[in-house]
Each structure stands twice: as structure tokens, then as C-alpha cells.
Image 1 (tube, rainbow, N blue to C red):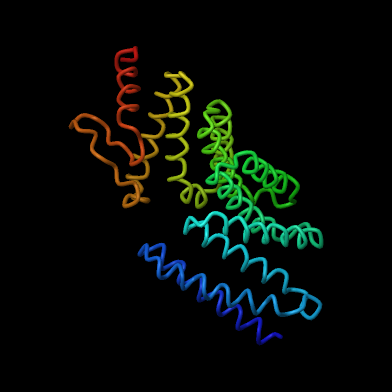
Image 2: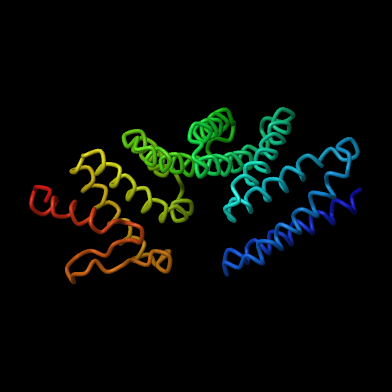
Length: 275
């Protein structure tokens, strides 16, 4: 059985390699290869009785999670829900045996599961899944080490709330994410510098649609400051890819921002009124 497990692990590692390559080259062929190797690993593990190897549940949970994540990346949302749901169930079994282990991995599964629900328009299920992850983090003895995943969870649910036009609630989520980032150490802060650009942009946009123009201006300025900080530190310059706003004296716009919206807020900032 130990040989089979090692072989299954090798297959799973091969699957993750193809998955990583597919992210880089956007080649669907590599996604299919990743799914093929992952399924072989799952088939081997499912054939081994849990009574023979007590760790088999853990290995199988990881493979289900990986398969669901691959389907999520491939936008096969029904299959993603199926495998992420199986992983969620098994994480619950493992957690009941040892509540102090696997919390981070389970939260990652729940974050992807919530995202799949959200993309399918199943907003209530998505919120329920996010809240399950929040409660899991709150009950953990390792709350400090879970701050990065909490930042991600608050931000992701904020995106969902904004999608539902629940702008005030979305802002509360983004602010909670920013508050958590204040307590991150220097290395962790560096990792989350780009996510802070995203959070400030969403705070600004949510404020704008909530007709809180002054707040929108403030958050856009904070976003601009964060981008300038990234440039100075030469962190993530290649990913930011700012677009020219069309005038030499205008600040560059991060990709994804609506230039018309930003222009309106910017005019309010300069003249004291919204045109």
C-alpha cells in the first residue's frame, strides 16, 4: 500500500506540474493532462481502504481539492463544485479527529468552493461558505497564522457583495481586510502589496456607487500611493501594467479601472463638484 501511495503522490505532483504550466501558457492541453494524472491518483487512493492506511483520507482530500481547483480554473463550475464539495466533506472528517490541524487547507478549499457558487450565481450558498470559513478561522488556535487567508476571504466576499450592489457591506469587508493587513509582518506585507491596490480600488468604486464621492476620492488617492510605493520598491511592476490616462499630467490608471468613473471622481477632487 505504501508503494501505491507513493505512486499516487507522484501522479498528483505530475498533475500539479501540468496545471502550473497551463497557467503560464494558457494551453488547454496541459489542463487536460493535469486532470488525467489527477484522476489516476484519485483512482489509486480510492482503491485503498482507510483502515489499511489512516492517512489515506488526508491524501484523498488533497487530490479532490486539487481536481476541483483545476476545474474552477478551467471554468467547469459544476465539476468544481462536485470535487471541492467532496474535499470539504473529508476536511470535516479530519477536523473532527484533530481540530488543530488542516485549518488553512480547509479554508482554502472553502474559498474556492464559495467562488464556484458565486460564479454560478448561487450567492446565498457562496455567503454561507464564506461564513463557514470565517467561523473555522475564529475557532482555530492558530489565528495569527491564518491572517493571510482571512484577508483573501474578506476581499473575495467583498467582491461578491459589490456584485450584489450591497456596497456598504462590501466596504466593511474590504476595510476588515485592510485592518488585518496592518498586523502582517514585513515579508507578509510585501506579498499583499498588490492585493492592497485591488482593495483600495474596490473601496473607491463601492464608495462611488454608494454616492460617497469624497470617500471615493480618498480611496483612489490611497490606491495611487500604493502603486507608487510598488514602483519605488520595484515589486510587481510587470503585473501592474498601468495604462496611460491620455494626458501627460494625468495619473496612470491600473488595468481594470473604469477611466470614465475615475475621471468623474478626479474632477470632483480638483473642482469640488462632480461633473
